[in-house]
Length: 432
Ligand code: NAP
Ligand code: HSE
Image (spheres, rainbow, N blue to C red):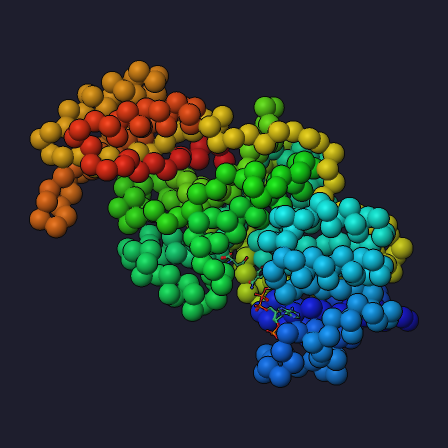
């Protein structure tokens, strides 16, 4: 029986996990693929580096052509990261008729459709399950397992490092900057942590999720994004008092007026299944018209969880080749709905106002909300002592309002002379 030969670009966290699983679970993989799969060559930057895995005779090289020019290699796995070089490696692989697996969310969020068009042109398989939520097989579920359903809405915790930070802030009452070093040490944060903290990593994954769930191209720049940098312990405590937990959510929704794609901190009821997703775990909550609600939960990062998703893609390709199946692609752009701007969407809000004691006349604030027809659901007042000064925190939750009107109301409130600084605003997610 012909062995399928794999060439891997990258032997870091994900590459090592992939080689480990392909080696140690060889037999179980073969029961599914029927064809044996072998790693023939691994290409890295620096061949002299100490490696975490035993390559069992696979060739280690720094010359990309040892993979790209090898006619025996059927499947190319790109787990290097970065954009331009990885894109060119994948394009060259397709031109040579090689099938491709990638874990590269940054690349797919920008060029997923373009690369899929190229794969289609060359009749090659192209999978990238590991690009969203690491080991959770969410793209495969959206693409294959939920056929028969119209996917209406997705709410995901798809960035493990920020979920780890928010969980520890909530459980241990530590401030964000005290936890960042631990998140770095544990390898959860990207090399540039702002990609996680400012929400861009989750926004990239959100663009991929929305494109695949709704068969409608959503690009990274169309996703509204706001990160967790400004979330404080006070907000976490006030939210808890109101029965909410703060999570960084990626929300994708297919509405009659257009596609929603947004990533930002949300207050969700503490009884919601997503509120119980702790530390670096990821979860994707999917609402479909026939199945109803379902949640996919698991590890969103790390060598073996992410390697598991990469191996799943390799095995799917091997199986398709064994059974002569034609390629099927994640990016099937059948619809061209507009992506809605955040100003066009409506939310309920949590608002924290810090005010000067004795100077505030809260009816001035309420009158402004009234002018914009924004209802107040709860209003609480807490004394705050800081650096010998005493002030008041007003915590207000509102009924639903158009974002644009809400922002206008907040601007007027911030201009009141008794208000200290900017209002803190967090959207409340009620539709999950
Ligand atoms: P990593 O640990 O930094 O490993 C990168 C690997 O790529 C290294 O082995 C490096 O070689 C190799 N490499 C870099 N530039 C190269 C070049 N020009 N030619 C050949 N090899 C090159 O990265 P990672 O964490 O495994 O991530 C890989 C990809 O998976 C990224 O796209 C990432 O976004 C994605 N991903 C990662 C995770 C995760 O948990 N880590 C989860 C989901 C998706 P040397 O070893 O010689 O330096
Ligand atoms: N930095 C990413 C996260 C790694 O925190 O989820 C996995 O994509």
